[in-house]
Length: 305
Image (cartoon, rainbow, N blue to C red; front, side, top):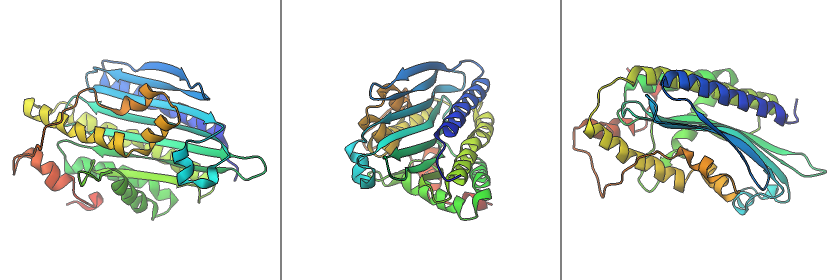
């Protein structure tokens, strides 16, 4: 099937949001996600789910949105001039999880679909998404597990997919003004349509379905690790980097704000507590310095000894 089936995509995304939320509620064991349904005046709406002050998660959001309109923001048509004069639909699931424990990494995942149509012309469509991991205190075996699951999700679609999407993720989640990666990467892809609709949709589903097997074993392994004020302070400092990336570079954040999306849902990715300290640097040789010296460096995580 070459023509896009947007209702099949929507059904999958809603099911994925349900599965992720129910699984994470079990993992947290204390709090449940609050559901907030919203309507976008210019067309469409969504279903935002947020958890606060859980046993595991300080804050987490899992958002579904499906927005549509007659005109894209100027920033989008400047990047893709062939979209000018087309109606559009954009739908996806996006999540960010900020755990209490600094030994449990923050994680982000997103899968999405875009469709632009104009009478008398072929539709323009693509899939995008991925998932990435942002540790504060890293563990090699966690990084290896994360990338093994990512590779397994990509393997049925060709041996070139994982290295291509891994490199894309490393390049995308890079804080240029800090000259450092946001974390240890994972997968990122955008504008995917060259496989045809059915295979592109299958690849997006495979990546969406891989998030929980990649993340849940890590949180279960690290959630009870002891920490103190020093580790918490470092976590808040590093969260500042997360905020900087999301507000300066993240395409989803920028598209959502520029297209008149719901601000509360778009900014759910920001952590509830964060700290900036002027010219802060870790002590050489410290556990905090190891994040910079080892984990925020390029690695083939699959081949660690």
